[in-house]
Amino acid sequence: MANTDLTLFQELFEQSPEIKYPKEGEVISGTIVKVEKKNILVNVNNQFTGLVVSKEVGNTVDLNALEAGQPIDVMVLGDSVERGLLILSLKRANQIKNLSNLARYNESSEIITVRPTEANKGGLLVDIDGLKGFIPVSQLTPLHYPRVEGADAEKILEHLEGLVGKEFQVRVINVDEAGKKIIFSEKAAIEENREKALKSLKEGDIVEGVVSGILSYGLFVTFEGLEGLVHVSEIDWGHVNDPSKFAKVGMKVKVKVIGLDSDKISLSIKRLKENPWDVLAKKCKLGDSISAPISRISKFGAFMDLEGGIQGLIHLSEISHGVVKDIRDHVKVGEEVTAKIINFEPNKKRIGLSLKALQEAPAKEEKAEAVKEEKTSEEK
Image (cartoon, rainbow, N blue to C red; front, side):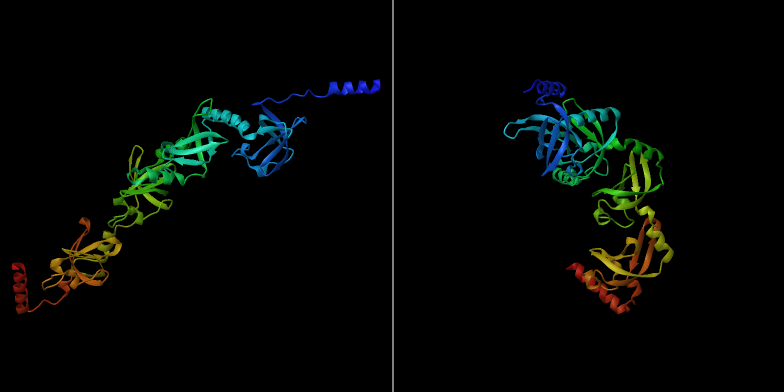
C-alpha cells in the first residue's frame, strides 16, 4: 500500500466515530429500518442492526403508526452471533419511561387513560408494557361499581370482567420505585367534579342519570359523578315487586332529588308523574261505576287493575248477593268487569268496589233460601 493511501486510511480511521458496543440492559436510541410481521428492525448509530421481536414490542405501541426513519428507544437484551443482530426490547425501554411518568403523575395528580386487561374479585388489572397496575373495586366510580345482590363474589367478578378492555380515566394514587405496586383510582379522577356537583345539588332538583345498579330494594342512578338511590317505594305509584321490570342497567332516566344527607342522595321516579290517586279522584267519585280488568284473585276478594297501577278491591262480600263458594265461579283474571265505587279515600289510597251493588237484589224468598244454604254450609 502506498504511503499516500496509508495516510488517508489513517486519517479516515481517526475521523470515524468510536465504535461502542452496546451493553446488556442499556437503553439506546436507534432508527426504524423496517416493520414486518410485528417485528421491528432497528439501525443503531449506523454501526449495528438490532431486532425487536413481537413479544418485546409491548401492548401500548401501535405498530401501524410506526414507519421507517422514525427514532426509537430500545433496551439491549443481548446479541445473536448467528444472525449478527442485537436483540432489543421496545417494551422494556418503555417500562422505564412509563414508571418515571407514573411517578410524576402520582405527584401531580394528573388524570390519565388506562385500559384494564384482566379482572379478579378485588378489582381490575392494568398492564402497561409489562408494568402491572391495579384499580381496586373501592376505587371505581358509582357508574362502574358492582352493585350485586348479597355481594355475590361470582356476580361481582362477572360484572368486573365486563369492564375489561374499556377506557378508564384515572389518577395514580400509589407507585413504588420498582413498579411493583401501582394503584389507580377512578374515583379520585372525578373527585373535584363530584364535590362541585354535590355542593350545587338541592332537594327538588330534577336530573338525568344512568341506572348503575338494580337490587331488590331499589335502583341506583349515577349523574355528574354522584350516585343516588331510588327506593323501591319511589319507583312507581303502584306496587313494585321487582325493580328490574322498570329499568335496565345503562338506561337513561330522569329522577327527582327528594333527600340529601351528606353524600347519601335519595331519588324518586314516581314523583315526576302525577299521583294516580289524584288523577282517579278527578275522574270518579263515590257511587260511580268503573270498568277495568280483574288483575288477581285471593281468598278474601278480587282486585281490579285501575289506571296508574291502582288496585281496587272487590271484597268477597261484594261479589254477589248469593253465597260465593269460589270467586272464580263469578269472575276470572283478565276479565273486564264493571263495579260500583262504595268506598273512596284517595288520601289514604283506598278504594272499595262492589259487583253486587250493580246487580238486582233477589226476592225475599230467594234471599232467605240463600241465608239458609249459607248456614247449612257453615254447619258442615
